[in-house]
Image (cartoon, rainbow, N blue to C red; front, side, top):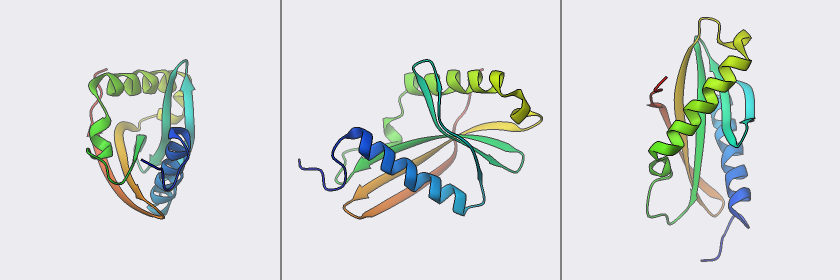
Length: 128
């Protein structure tokens, strides 16, 4: 299948993150970190909204896709996200003071120049 939008998975992921970030900023959230790394783990977007720190996983697929991008977040992937969030909070205690941490997903389906965005708040819970 020839890719209409992106040349490779990295380009696809980067484009999805740009779309997701713009979507969240337009809803009044504040960006704290983007592509925060802890070893081989990565948190796509870390946003602040009111009394919440939102750890946002961005999943992007091109149309047609057999599964919704959200469905590609397996249990091992959720565990890696939670572990990275734990590391982030340990290193950035200044940000977490009294704020609740939640895990959201932005699911993006690209079709040429068009895209569909689904925002799933509190998509999964931590297993601290």
